[in-house]
Length: 363
Image 1 (cartoon, rainbow, N blue to C red):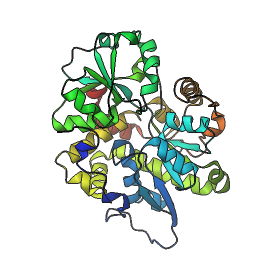
Image 2 (image 1 turned 90 degrees about the vertical axis):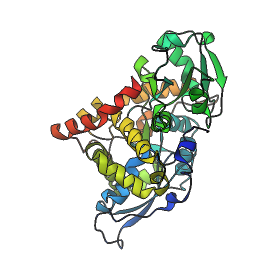
Image 3 (image 1 turned 60 degrees about the vertical axis):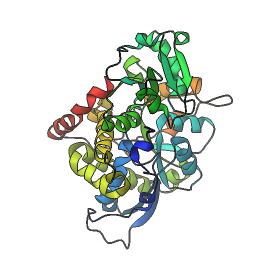
Image 4 (image 1 turned 30 degrees about the horizontal axis):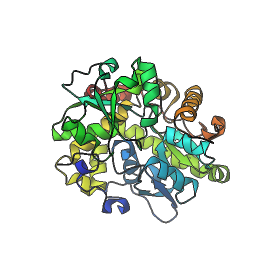
């Protein structure tokens, strides 16, 4: 069996991209709503679960928007299609957005979706690899096209390990998880939000050593649009962001209902024997990344300018390639539309409780 992010979903790449609002949607009169297009960065999974909640629970409708949600095929492609105006709004991994901006693509981040990309090193739960230093002398499966790959030298530097003492095996991202399960490698470099939900429901327990544990702080996913749209219709941007942030807050406090909405919107996930657990783990890991000072102190969507500047420096050094120019982070990221929503102490406690079972995967 090929066990990967794609195969674990058993064909999730079909029909649901065009799924319409379900009976869970709040009452609204379609006439008068402004039609807006949005693309996720990947197939239906934890980090983009909020979009189906925002659409089908009526958060965007409350703000006067009729939003279509299309699934993406990677953060790079999502950023490029938004920059080109193919979609009004999109989401993409924050480091990838910085790369695209460094290549002069017109794109702006208008709200932070989650706060840790959860890049890291994945191992089987029973692995003797407990700390980064244990990777020396071992085999590491990695895909050059995966977003975390360019930062392996930085991880080695921060973690105090000798990368030359690790045998890095290049593997296709579609079979990377299989090489771990079959013990062809001792560890893989990947994203926890994709690898863990693909393997854990199948009975393969995994642990991640996140890059953030050694001080590499990369934000997860950002909401994006074109600078021209931001300039021309700020009211539209604000309405879109507010609906998204309300949905993200809802997924943290109403966990079970959010999963149910997601499964109803994506029937090909729901019919899989592992679909429900896949959704729950993905959302649990995503929500963990939102239990951070940025959200608790400044509200949903707020990006720390100092962290953004540091991210931009690291991305430019390790991932942007020749000819890239550091973008003006003051214009690439805006907090104008965020920070308006915070969890109460009661809701924060509820969110912590829902997320607690998923901490075991990233420790």
